[in-house]
Length: 189
Image 1 (cartoon, rainbow, N blue to C red):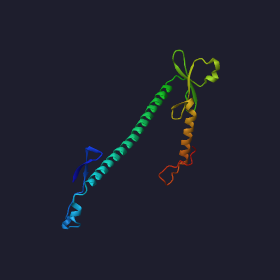
Image 2 (cartoon, one colour):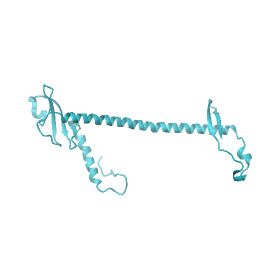
Image 3 (cartoon, rainbow, N blue to C red):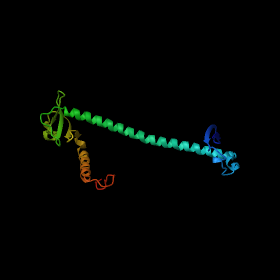
Image 4 (tube, helix red, strand yellow):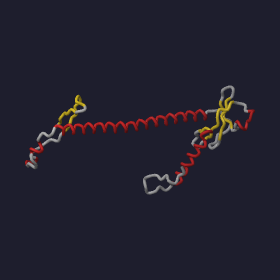
């Protein structure tokens, strides 16, 4: 049984309150006094019920909004990660297509230069080794990783630290504990 109630603080808005259906003789037996169970109670009881329903609606809406905000933040983060992956892949592909007269081996540092003609090429000779007689414009230094990706010189130390942590994780988790959770306690910060 539904009743529409206007709240004192919002007289122009109706809130619907659903009351439990009444049956004065369930299974043919009168269990309690029908006067006490079916009488119309204090109108303020309906207002209190309507306020509780409205408050519940507000909490449900706020909770849904909060959870959707978290998901939206995660989507933005994943979009940024995807953008970075695509940028790195483009950079790596461009670097793999740079001219080079040596066989590139993972784990080594290579130095990218540009000739006056615009040709980009890799060398194993650093600008420091060239000294003031460096023949071409220096564009950057990159380390070729074992996954054939390129790491700029300024990021090599950070990347090697990350790889070291992953190596320790892989080495320490060769026999997984009975727990389903991974144990990161033994890893350095």
